[in-house]
Image 1 (cartoon, rainbow, N blue to C red):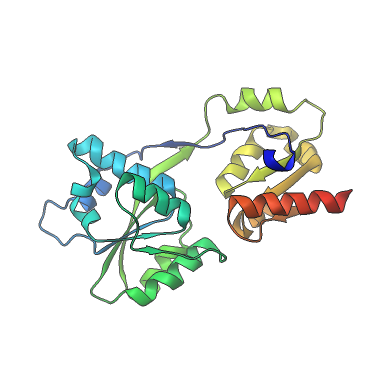
Image 2 (cartoon, one colour):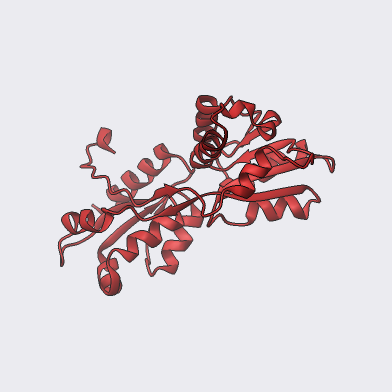
Length: 244
């Protein structure tokens, strides 16, 4: 956005936190009962990569590559997640191609690689949509979904928002990269949200986030053609030009 001449202000609205109980995840990473470890571990975000590696480090003090479950094949939802895997563990064996809704794209890329002998581990956020896990199970794949992290509102988000948005001023352009971020943004305005949202120019990273913004009462949402930062910038630039 800065490169195309926009004034950019960051407003962090997600703070990743450990799950309330990480025992199921620790047990899946290193089963103590002799049960089989996963043949695939599927990561749907960079946050999931960090959460899994951090849980293992806290529990054992050893590097994540020593976790038995992570010795199988790795799948990533996209290049950002693959980059985090390369940094924290090793590059993914399979990366879903860009250009499709992320969960469906990953599912369609992964299923041809699986058989009924595989066990797929999916560490994910507490509020993860069921698309991927349901799709695997519907195809007859043994799939274990575990909460690896949760997402809360940063402690200083409300005070930051008060500084950014005057009580009666327009909200202007705001980008949204997940439904939870949209929820957190709306919550900052409390009872004033139905009035304040009228001046919002929302840009969504993809159709799922766009649909959630619509459910929050946003009538017009600019949607990126692909779920990438560059595509989101292009979408906003194009929409802004049309408004002139």
